[in-house]
Length: 245
Length: 230
Image (cartoon, rainbow over all chains, first blue to last red; front, top):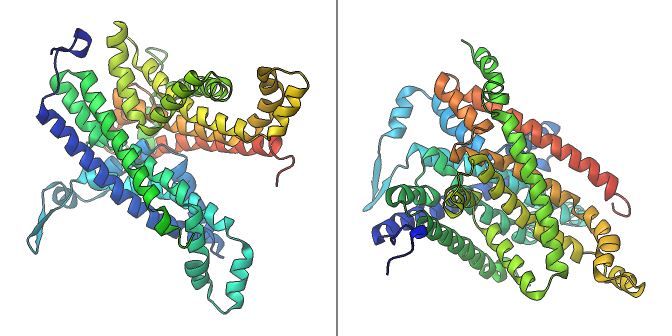
């Protein structure tokens, strides 16, 4: 059956859908790495916010404000063009050339410079938002808990690590999941610096086939599946993360 | 040329694009896109939230599903839909700026629909009962009693959404609309020497804009929501 004129008289061939599936896989991989890095960094930033030293708190506040109140797109371009301009030429040549590491039969390819720039920019941006959520979680832990743990002879670091953080993480599970879904959506911006993720590949298929509607429909569907999958995974993790509740 | 000279030589272009000789661009165009999209998104959100509260079941369901879908897809995808398909569907040439405004307004409106609905739901049921038992209609109760209280709770949601919209105006870069980010990449391509200072200047402009909104939001919050809250 031939589709009507406004659909461009054609369906997508399977290898074009293959391109987009590859794009979706890269989106998922990038999002996964970003979520991991952003959570680690976010916890560190939130811990920094609770420090006694004013200079540490000021540094964290500045980091959060700069990353939250400027567009991710500009941050991506800044890392991609700006940092590339700062590095010596030899380093850039090495980064842009393909490298492979073979470890026990597994071949790991060094990612492209675009991917590394995207990973850094997205992780720092997302970390700022994760840090605010965790900070809100830390604030929700009753101050008495802190005092009791200190009175029991724990060091401030032990109190943070064993008393405050576990309770805070339980409170922020839901908002954190929201941030992770945001990360999946935000990876789409990396197409601007040439990362071949899902949005990029849908544009590629669109310009190759001129089947605009079909290309974007498949990409939109794949995004919905990724977001839905992440939501389901987040929901299923609830009982294990929630401890005895 | 030093970085400072490069930036001051291009500052007019970054702020206004080729205006007044050509079309408006740069930060001025970003402000136009941001303000229009924020206004439309707020109206859409308010209407959507009210429909979710008072609308007939079928319409309610339709609005809820569309809002959920719009919130789940990246803004980039919606910009693609609007940019490439609006001209096809309506067989007219839609300017890029308008398609970006449409996409941002739809996404912002979807998020605000959910926020307004939640805000209305947060008002105690007694307020509704009091209004209805005084002989008000459901619409009057909402408009005169519930909404004025709910809007105060919603101030932070609205301000956050406006800030997100301001940042998302930079996505117009992807479809080549000559707003601040696009113009900055043009300057960067032309000068080729100081990418970091150029993009840092642009980041600073956005930062001032968003921080201004954060400051305004904090003031509104203490003024309107401060009563009865800590």
